[in-house]
Image (cartoon, rainbow, N blue to C red; front, top):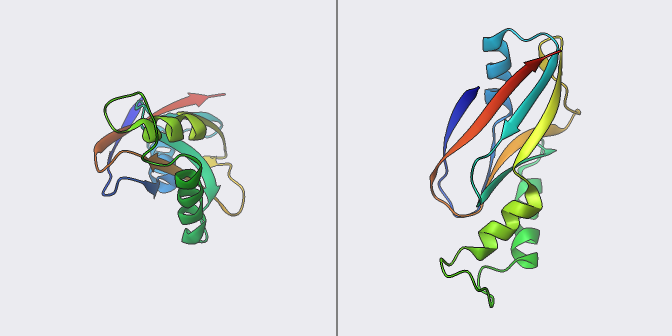
Length: 131
């Protein structure tokens, strides 16, 4: 397993990690198989979305903030209940096909680490599984 260290700089932030995951695949020499990407945090997540226009991740963050406001009548006392909820919506893991040594993503797709309770030092775990 490879561990990517990620330093976030904002409370809510999407960080493109596509190239770093591709680099893990190349370092392992994987030609064909899958890669499992897991985020071991309850207030962060991992997702695939468009990577051509940065307004897309801005819009996703904006909609999540409207759906799950920071301040509401939450029972969890740490002040980050919205972050836990956003993490649950986005999810903690992805599985992506690797073929001919390359991530098999759509033309406009990228892999994003999603921070909802930053800034923090985070990790993203990458498990490469040959076929």
